[in-house]
Image (cartoon, rainbow, N blue to C red; front, side, top):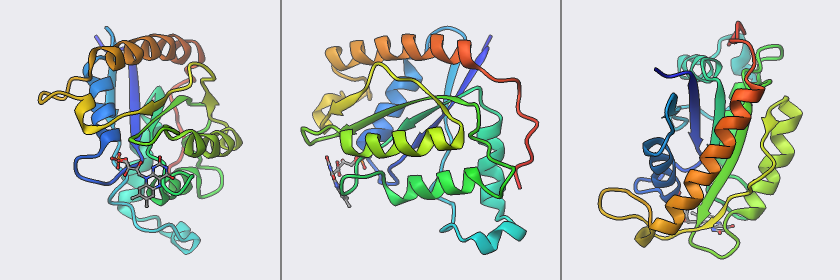
Length: 191
Ligand SMILES: Cc1cc2nc3c(=O)[nH]c(=O)nc-3n(C[C@H](O)[C@H](O)[C@H](O)COP(=O)(O)O)c2cc1C
């Protein structure tokens, strides 16, 4: 039986995304009682506050999916030393209109993968400054700055052994954190 629903926002829209592979590997390794499901962000239009009077259906669906989770995972690449525009766009939709912020009080954690040595540290630092302002309850440790390439996963999508061990330890810590900080089921308006 599932007692913890974790929604996963992947910051990449690319086919063959390393970060989506990472998200899929996490979902496959979810411990007993935990379900990790991606909440897609690619179909959202570009946020414009004029839309707040008649929120697009894709945004209403996205916000309802976020509201239905117990916790959130942000799995993001780094684009030009920040988070990708698509992820920021999704966060803007999730947080507005005023009074309908579905991110509020969600326990959450951040991971990111890049072929580069910085391992998305700069992007994650930006995300760490955005999310608490929206009342997201962020896991502090462990930080997950992952230098990952296509060869970090086998043909079935399973990560290399060492990466898999890191992911298991991370999930263990996050699941404990999420159960401790889980809020009451959201009754929030989404639009
Ligand atoms: C527009 C753009 C900007 C990028 N900027 C960075 C960067 O600042 N730091 C970094 O480590 N990698 C950067 N990269 C390389 C990405 O880390 C790499 O494309 C990675 O595979 C993206 O993750 P994904 O496979 O999940 O899409 C950039 C890639 C693109 C397309």
